Amino acid sequence: MKNVLIIGSTGQIGSELTLKLRKEIPGSTVVAGFIKGYEPKGELLESGPAEDVDVRDGKRISEIVRKYRIDTVYNLAALLSAVAEKKPLMAWDIQMNGLLAILEVAREEGCAVFTPSSIGSFGPETPHVMTPQDTIQRPRSMYGVTKVATELLSDYYFHKFGVDTRSVRFPGLISHMTLPGGGTTDYAVEIYYAAVKGEEFVCPIAAGTFMDMMYMPDALKAAVQIMEADPSRLVHRNSFNIASMSFDPEIISAKVRELVPGFRMHYEVDPVRQAIASSWPDSMDDSCAREEWGWAPSFDIDTMSKDMIEHLRARFSGQ
Ligand code: AKB
Image (cartoon, rainbow, N blue to C red):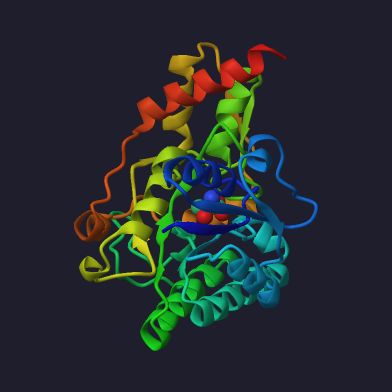
């Protein structure tokens, strides 16, 4: 991996992955691809090239790939689960027509492609505890449908055309830098913001609903490590279960309260998000990722919570 195009570089994952790759790959060009209206700012804009690109526009993707001799594309453009339920046709259009456009360019230009899947690719019939790598999926949300289709289409391009497609199934991602936009797991980010701002948190997910979660530095590590893995060791490709922690709202609120005494939370359950959350795994078995490319997370709920609170306190103390 040397010259990289990140499509969706101003989103929750893209904004941090772009900066990480620019710092960590010597002599690389990491292009921040963005959609008009979501222009990069600050360090993201100043630290490297940026190009506007609609993920569905194969001609434009191809121009950028040729201009910068791109060898790896991170396809991070997507509508998250709760928004996708409100705009299912748009979600299908962006997720599927976008993926197809990228895969076609990758086939012609010889690029590797990372398109994340998610815990959202599983459904109510999936075994919920220690969800195996290979198991029944059958999600009922549009987000999940596009994620399963993404896994299948990415594997198809690998087997049929030899395109080097790889990916992981991300848990809910927690970060202090860029907020997620419209996911089911967003509550696990928003709770820290509310605590640091001294606000009571209104939790949209019911007590007892467990989901896999992950701190952003681990998610970024996985996104890089999978693309650099020795291909001869990969039995799977799209997509690997990866896990680091699983909790419900009661557990995370107790953790936040340890660090922010007096923190308060009450429940106003959102039926759309709750239906999605209840259909997702409680915890995934990530042993294939560990065996095939050495996956190991660095953060647990304690170290993540401490780091989140420290960073958010530093940010909001000046305001
Ligand atoms: C969402 O909640 O939609 C995402 C995800 C788990 O894929 N954070």
